[in-house]
Image (cartoon, rainbow, N blue to C red; front, side, top):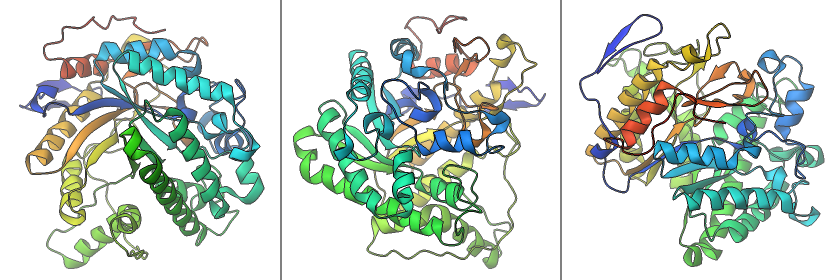
Length: 443
């Protein structure tokens, strides 16, 4: 396959793979999160999360002063969005619950919001009717703001019990249909960006002690995960027949000089700081990690659609092999992998939907996932990030990750399939025999 990229480069690769190259039963899905897509932040009994407060009170923190008040209006588009998933041929969908939509006060004893429960029940039921398996994340960074005001959220160990109560309620209410649970999404990013750099909610960089708070938060996040996982395994797993895990982010770091021991050690420290910090406590009795990192790095691979995003397909292979060799080859689902485009308001919709770079990104990364599986890695699923363009945290709407283009201009949030969506449909259905994704598909 050869693709001409928007920046004029040509990129060719000989092995244009499809889902048929993977084992039967391999899980294919896309991923989103509640605050990034739902909108309706004051509807249906929901109360603010730390992200609502951060967006509205930290001037200049979000590009263009954007916020998730409307996001992409997914709260009102359940049936339409599930039909788009079905047309793609997806067998799974990863999404998150909004804690403050289910428990507005953050605490079980302060009351359950039935409208929020009904919303997620309807979403789960709609997915199941269309033979799409829900993969549910309990917490994707949107801690109830009530808990932040009460005791500073994840800086206080009280949150472990409150999260445990929330998780147990979710297992009880939804576990008859949800068989794949994720406790936390990328705790490292939350701890470092929210409490170290301060660029994410709750935005304590410069307010609190950035030298200690990320470590306190990380510790409490790990305890919250362990407590919720223990509740599920002891009280629900046998009767409900599901599994539970955690989503950790990883980037592979190469030594600047492969033959230089100092460079090798620096690369190892960098990976240990991001990934090992959380993996070691999960896979050993030790809570020790290397905390001293002092190095300068060079980004590897071609630059993506934004200046902080670089594509290095070999990195996903090496990360999976490291996981296999260092941590005993655990069961792995790749819960997020995707390509970022910069928002270009000068492009017409039909032009913005031409995203050959994203197709190249997915194809080359999936080739390396397949290679890792061939070398023994226990990978059982892959989720593209993201199903649709959405609110991308401190970048607001200035960055697009979606397979579907979202039109923000007229208040309808119409979804249009990008070229990558059509490619992904063909990838999932070789040869595609389901209903064609029309040029104007979406609502």
